[in-house]
Length: 358
Image (cartoon, rainbow, N blue to C red; front, side, top):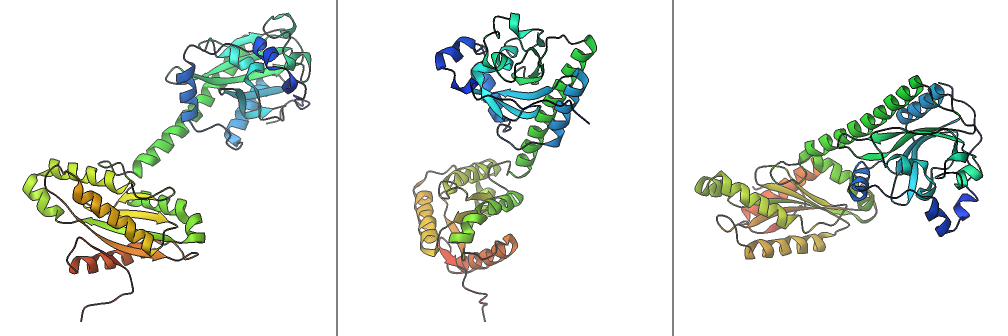
């Protein structure tokens, strides 16, 4: 879709205005500003790269409303940031200059300024008195399903004008499309996150372990990695003797203990009824052993829902630059864990090759 040509936006003198001058021009924050900012940040959209889906919407807005400029503007604490823009080069402006900061004060209706020269809110605005010399503005608030205005989809012109009823309807419909896109993408992220989480402990699950290893790969490439497979000793007996509720409570408490050891980008995953994986990026064998021993001390001293527990662990050390194949790591860790179990449990054994009993 072709869009109207427009010179780029020049904010050089706008950003040189004094703080007092800017404050005199800026809109007051909405009454729900804290909740609004929290909602905006929860979508993780600020400072993301341009995306064709959003660019198509701004292009359509400029085309349908016959304006040289169109923006998806998100109002952050001190700035308005443009997720998509037509006819402008800067990715953001100070919030005090933002027309959209005024538009979100009445989020249930579109704000239209037919001639900025005669509107006292904008007549002295640097974006009006200097480049890009905005004379017309229309912004449809981006109103979420929770009733929070994130910003606007807006169109701007260098000449006074008004939108037709059809253009207003189209702009509002496109604004709803922006919000739908934002919310659907957040929902997809949340669903993916839920799919990667163990519902009982809220740790990563087996699939989430793959993501954890991907995050740890850059550190592991330079400094190596330790991979620990942990088993809660006697868990089947505990469950039979004390019941499922006590067993689940034990698992949750154990998860909270284990997750205190790794530092990001490492972490912990639950991969079976009584098995946990701990990823320690940058840790060598001695550091990993010390981590497991601290964990054993913590567990021994804790008060448990049913009976006292202990843990047995298999340790795999990955050298810097060695591939992080989760299947290989699990196989080696299980082999080491089996050796620790045969040694009497409540201990840790490092993988040192595929020794077999004779």
